[in-house]
Image 1 (cartoon, rainbow, N blue to C red):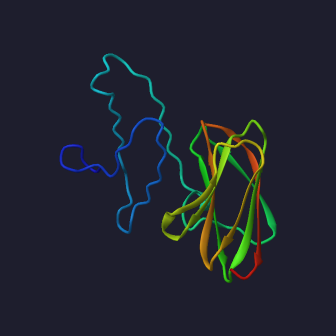
Image 2 (image 1 turned 30 degrees about the horizontal axis):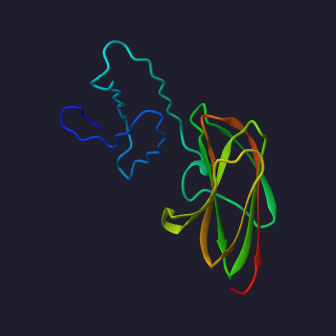
Length: 166
């Protein structure tokens, strides 16, 4: 908010939340963050707050993910780099093989998201290597790699899209 007395919050969220805020044209400048303890809590309550500049792979439209190419990335779920976002286009009906390779100590989720943010499929709750294989119609798609439980680690992501008749 620009003023705690006059303004309404830009965003409210609970503990362990992660969000990205991108000011619109003419909305840049200084922002304030207000942290409140629950009303039922008495005394001091420790908290940890992080703020970081978003990179190309942190927000839409995301980093490009070429066909039949492996990209390397890393997440710092214990810091402010919780999600990496990649984009790709499918021009004809196709079969998609989306593969995520990560160490067993790096619990990451692999999500396929359609235009408008609709989650299509998720390899969630798995550890190590994950794969999504499905038929896709033409359109723009996003692959999101998300850290779980504050995990840090490196990963490789690859996409193989082959034309087919649906």
